Every structure is written in C-alpha cells, then in structure tokens.
Image 1 (tube, one colour):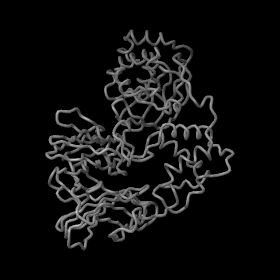
Image 2 (tube, helix red, strand yellow):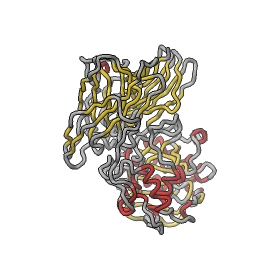
Image 3 (tube, rainbow, N blue to C red):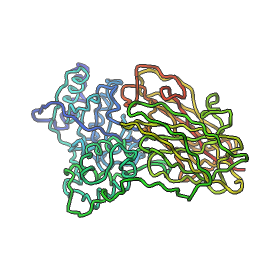
Image 4 (cartoon, rainbow, N blue to C red):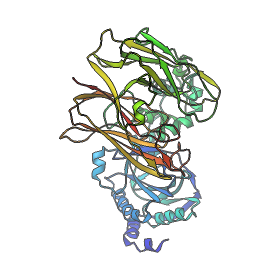
Amino acid sequence: MNSKLLGSLRIILCGLAMGLAGTPAYAAAERVGDFALLDEQGEFHQLSRYQQLDAVVLLAYDNSCPSAREAAGMLADIQPQYGERVQFLALDINAQDRTTESAWDLSFPVLADELKLVAENLQFSQSGEVLVFNPQRLSLHYRGGAGPALLENIEAILAGTSTETTNLAFEGCLISYESDSSAAPDYSTEIAPIIVEHCAICHREDGAGPFPFDGYYSLAGWSPMVREVIMNKRMPPMQVDPAYDATPNAHFLSAEKRKKLMRWMQAGVPRGDGASDPLSEIPLGKTFEWQLGEPDFTIDTPQNEIPAVGILDYMYLELELPFNEDKWVRAFQFAPGEERVIHNLSAFVVAPESDFWGEERQARTSKRRFLGSFIPGENPATVFPEDSGVLIPAGHKLALQFHYYSHGRILRDSTTIGLYFHDTAPSKEIVTRPVSAEFTLSSNDPDQTILASYKFTEKSTLLAVRPRMNQRGKAMKFDLIPPNGDSQTLISVPAYNYGWQPHYWLETPRALEPGSVVNVSGVFDNSLSNPFNPNFREEVQWGFDSGEEMFTGYLTYIVDR
C-alpha cells in the first residue's frame, strides 16, 4: 500500500471501528449492470460514462446510520489524493429531497436512489458499505467497509493489478428491500399495462422502436434490454429533470412503475395466471388520423431514400408555398411516411432567398418563425394559444431538416404536413429566438461548459424551449432571471441525447418583464466516456453539420402588445 496512506491514523482507526473482520473472499471480478441517477444538484451520473477514470467508489448512504457517516468522513479524507483518477459518489438509499441531501455537506455528489432500485440491483446489504468499480469494464473489484482494505483495492486498480472481487465482512446498518417479503407483480394486470401505456406507441410492428412488444414472449425475451435501459435511463426517451417546471413533451416512468418492472424481471418474468395478454391485443399497425379534422392545407415532402446501414447526416428540403397573401397558422400536425427512420424533423418558415438556417448562420441570436418539429411517439397536433399563431408571409416557403436513422434495410419516407389557418389575423405572433455560442471543443475532455444568454427588451410570454447540440452534447439547462429577481430553472435536460431533440412546451407559460434574462447553459463531453462520440481524440469546431458541434437554445414566445 502507498506509504502516505498507511500513515493516516484516522483511516486505520475508522476501519477498525467499523468492525472489518474475517478473511477476505476473492473471486474473478464480477460484472455489474450499468446505472444512472441524478445528484443533489440535478446533475446526471452514469457508471459507464466514467470511462476516462480508473475507478468509481460508491458508498451506500443513510444519514441516520453512524457507520455511513463515518465512512463518508473517511472517503472525504482520501478523496484529494486521487485527483481526477477516481470518482467518489454517495448513494442516498432513502432518496431524500435535494435540500436535505445538500445539507449533509458531503464532499462528493449524492445520488438519489428512488425506491432503492440501484441499491438492490447492486446488492447493497448495509448502509456504510462501499463498492469499487472499474468503469471501463463495468466490473466490481471491492465490497466491504471503508478501511485499509479499501485503500489497497483502489491502489491495485490504479496500478492495473486488480483482477478479482474482494468481498470483506462488514457491520453497518441493515438495508431492507420490499422484494424480500412481497410477491412478484402480475404480468397481465400490472406489468403489461405499463408497457402498453409507456412503450408500445413506438415498440410496435413497423414502429420507431427497434423491436415490438406484441405479447408476453416478446417482452420476456427482451427483458434484459428493458432492464438495462431502465437502469441507465436511456428509456423512456427525452427525460427532463422532474424537479423543475412540468412539460407535456417529457416522457416519464415513475419510480413505482420502474420498481414493478424490475421486481418482475428479478423474479424470472413469470407469466402468471391471467388469461388475457394486453400486449397481444395492441393493433399491429399504427393508425394515423388528423386530430383536428382535415387540414386547411397539406404539404407532401418529396420521397427520401434512407440506406439500410450507416450514420446519416442531416437532409434538407425547401418547399415552395402557393400563398399570395399572408397566412396565420393556428395548429399543425405531421403525418410521417416512414416513422421507423425519422428521429427528428424540423420546419421553419423562411424568406424566398433564405435556407433552413437563415440568420442563424451569421447572428448569435435572431427572430425566426419556427413552425414546429416531429419526433416519434404519440404525434398529436400542436395547437397554439388562443389569438396567436405563426405567420407565413406571402411568398415565403418552408425549410425542412430531416434527421434519419438507418433501420437495417432500405426504406423510403415521404411525410405530409397538415396546416390549420386562422380565418382572421390573430393579435399575437409566435416567434422563436435561437440563442447560441461559437466555440472549439478540446479533445478528450468530458466536461466543457458553454453559456449563452438573451435579455428581453419587450414584455413577452415564454411558451417553449428547445435544446440543440450534436453528438457531444451532454446536458443543457434554461434559467430565467427576472428583473430584480432570483434565478429560476425552467427546463433542465441533464442527460442530453442527440437522437431526441423535442420542443419542450411549458405547462405554465412564463410572463417576462422587460429586462428578463434567459441563460442557456450546457456541457459537452468530447471524451471516451461519451458513447455517441465519433472521435474523442480530435478538436471539434462549431458548425451546422452533424460532424461539427453547435450550441443553441431556442426560445419560443409571444411579444405582448
């Protein structure tokens, strides 16, 4: 062991006080499942996204447990010695609120573990217990108390000599789990309805999901993947931080429902005695209908051919419109031609001489007419607030950007856009303002922060926001600072996913006084730890192509006259 560590009397005493006893048991390093949680600051932590580090140390924490508090103190003592090579984390097994977690004043992030989902998955048995992982291999190398053996294990991982899992006897505060005494959830009445409500809209025959859930055997067969994407929060998509303003565009799966799914899978996916199978009753095809009736005007896009494999760059189309007078759009809806391959479609109203990007190419902020976007899922019509709309000036056109994913075979898409007009001009125009920044990303850097902001000069009502980054985007947040007021977070996307770029409509629009500022802050991960990163060894320039990087927050609002 490192001589400096051996000289720390407090560490040795702490280890002895925690009752480390018995002979260590060794086994080949265990593989663990990936997991992800938010901390007390709303930041996203995922085990597999620490691949640039050598080790992750995770403490099962209960502030009422003396052993856990003692262990936290010991970890705080050794944390500075490892610099940026080791990440220390606490797992709040009781998922207290963030104010409570912050008040503990731990020296490392505290992850809220709703209903002990992660603790049970990692088989924590006692508060104060510590696990040490190699994040590059998703392997467990230590399970035990916070004492000298822990330090030896960390040193071995850093030296590259740790190949086994050390299991050390430990006496802390016992953790109890609901699954210890309760029966597995029933498939027909508890599990299948969750899938029907939250998953089947995409995971159906010829849907946007890569496989359908069309019956018990399909769900059972894909259950390892379901377990993985629940634990690492890859699904449901478009997850925003629930601590802030609600938005109808976010997809949430409650902790209670996630717990049911996990318990059912832990029990071996039992079919149960229910005669019905709700998943088999879902129609194979997805039936499209115009939610508001036949549109006033429809636009059919030319057919795009999407190759079977490969990473695709954006496709752009400009569609001429036959209007000789101004038109005001009160609602719109997209009718996708091939939903399996469309992961994002955006439409702007632009002048005859402009392209999709318009003034965004030169100006860091500008007023634009954003009609809306399509993403896979329920695809309802978007209806603008009363007495407001998006203006299509006479002679203007639609500029479209398609983001396609390959699906394993050549497919063709021709999407229809349905527009609904006001009979008379509304009094309020809806505009969208891009707020952006230019930058260069350094190579092999997992945390590069970018900030852009806009000060409103007129009284306005903020309706929606939209984050926009490319493959190296990690997180984005929108904060409102009223004149002479405290900062308020509007929307936070702590785990930005390049494949999902929705327009987040605020459930409660915000009145903005002149002088109000919206700050758009974000983080880029240009490192090995970013699974979407094509090459972390290169600097990345700002630009509009998918191989470059951009940072834009879109603010959709009405100027109040």
